[in-house]
Length: 335
Ligand SMILES: [Zn+2]
Image (cartoon, rainbow, N blue to C red; front, side):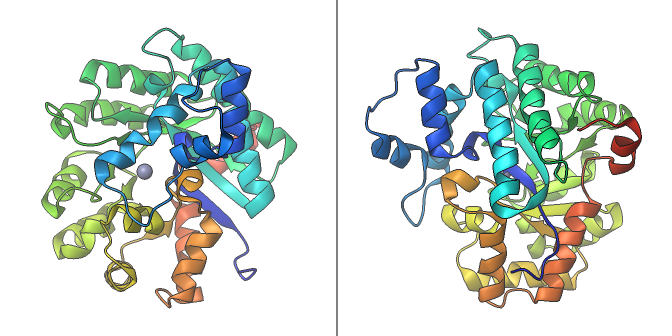
């Protein structure tokens, strides 16, 4: 795999990206009472150990990791270890981890600003130690949260835009009362402040839902978006709006939104043939026991894309980065 000169992971959730042994250590350092005193049991509890998982069980896997990460100390270490580790072990030089700060504050018990500052410091420490890394943090809104709470997350993103927050996302399973229409103004506001926007769509939902999302929300990227392959109309819109899809093959295969390798090949080739830009990411590397290199290997070994095409997808990841590389250099900020 040495033919790829640079690697990027721009769609992964902090909750499922920290190595289990580090989470174990953080939990003990904070005196969190875990359901088991056996490390192997804990490991099995926060990682996926079967070929497939249901959509609702998939989200349950976040419970413990989010609880353990819910303090400034835990966030600093989580970001530091994840960002530095992905570079040291796999040579990932562009990283854009995402997390929902509201799931890190123990229902308001912890101050959101301290959580965010600690996260930024953790990432910054990794960048000081390894200057080849480019990293920025994406704050995730969640469909299960009410609009007023999600608005606070977006406002925090703007507040910390010069400290390393690079954009916002909406994730989480669909919930009653959630409507994309409520978020149009907020997304515009975030973009006007100089940040970038993405949203999880076209994964579990229908192509129609994805079409609605990309038609009404101002977006720079889409997380997943595999359902676009079913609609020429959506693919045309993505090309016209220059929206890059951040696809995570193993994640989609595990929850069954991509049925098998043949389906994966059809999806990626259809997007490619229709000139839709996309890149390969991990989503939940620690939980899925994957890395960007393993994802690329899967695509290469199964002749899903040629090496030239894979290279192109890596270039698209860098092109669609939310980090303003020029500004970063000029301002001499690490983030
Ligand atoms: Zn995701």
